[in-house]
Length: 274
Image 1: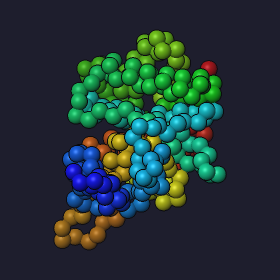
Image 2: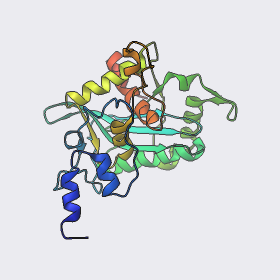
Image 3: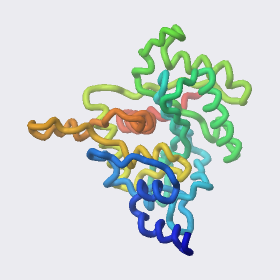
């Protein structure tokens, strides 16, 4: 390659992360064919940290969680797709922001909860040890859609939430972690649209930051599309706020369940004690 070729590509596609990932990173990422829900608001230069000397996401560094604030785990569990996001609601640059500092996401892979939940436990242990915290200075708050409380899995003979809590209880001692009690995010008419609007609001107000290592969350912000309008009919505003089913939907759900709970019940993210 001629000298400076890669640097030239980075400069040329600085504001087009999809094309940059294709040409520089060798990743084949689909470009949204419809109306993206967040792409016009999401700006990696503003919403991703840390950045390298060129102003690009620094994939070698982490965005660190803050000691003295809960570790909020949003989860969207399933038989084939699992998305767990690690978040905080903390003061950054003088005002409160949502900070997404980690993720555990599997798409189109059948992974038993018995294998997946210990991965979450190890991640919690890693962050507490890295930050020099414990359950008192960085307690956990788990939040899931309330359908996980009534989705019966015949294979396990239990509901998702009960199964996850049971497996956590069986493995937590190995990692020196406390019990959990998963909280339900409310689900009602237009609750999905409200979650879309809520994340859009946080992005527009610069009240959301994502770690450079959270590639799934960043891809969701670039590529999650709205459902298409029906040809030959009047514009339907509800479709414009309804996410299209895709692999990005699970990440969106996990990320925004805590946001919805906090917006409706500000005390909902207070950790359970005792």
